[in-house]
Image 1 (cartoon, helix red, strand yellow):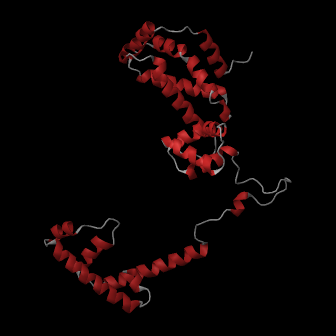
Image 2: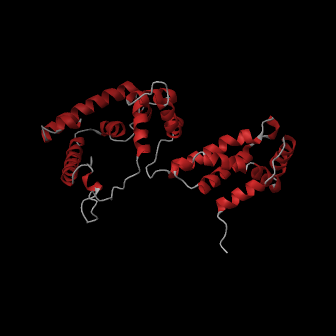
Amino acid sequence: MNAEPAGTSMISAARKAPYLDRIEEHELAVRWKEKRDQEALHRITMAHMRLVISMATKFRYFGLPLSDLIQEGHVGLLEAAARFEPDREVRFSTYATWWIRASMQDYILRNWSIVRGGTSSAQKALFFNLRRLRARLAQGSEPLRGAAVYKEIADAIGVSVSDVALMDSRLSGPDSSLNAPLSDDGEAGSERMDFLVSDAPTPDEVVAASVDDERRVLWLNRALGVLNERELRIIRERRLRDEGATLESLGEKLGISKERVRQIETRAMQKLRTALLKINPEMAPAMI
């Protein structure tokens, strides 16, 4: 005999679970919060599984299994139970609704598309309300069309028109694999990925840049030889490190004022420019 699917078993159990009145709900919530009574937690969550199922049916149009939505909603229900404060005089169903919806929405955003969507509150609102707002605008006395619809939706949700257009295009069609063939005849051939333009440098450009970098390092090392010990230290500390030292910190280390450090640095840079110009007149000015 086959085991009953998890989603189906949850629905069956939810239908059989008794409703809780306000007093009984409060008593169970206190038992769970103060004593971590697992039986109290079970009774609270099972009594509210009808709410989870009802909310899950509202998200069915995203094409995900209803059983998965119910299970994600159950996770949100447990999270709500863990955070619920029974002494605030708020019914548990009111408090839990937000957590159930948030859990389902996060699941949908993770699984609806292989392309990760926006995660900001505005982007989530756009994702879950675009169809509804578009349908409502289309049913008006004077239906809006084209860019006017995008503008109305953008103003209602608080996003840009380009965000609305991009989300609309994503919701209008399925994801396409980059490895899908361009031809529909089933024969081996070019794939979509073959025609993507890469912004990365070509192998020749990478090699040329590497050679140029090596030459610049060689020239710079030769030029540094014209500096005295204090000038070299200041240039290394100020110019040749990812996070250059401040004039104040170098002055403290060398026992001089920050203005004196600046003067020595300026003189050292002039000496480096002169040395580099002698080594390579064309490349040196760009290196300083």
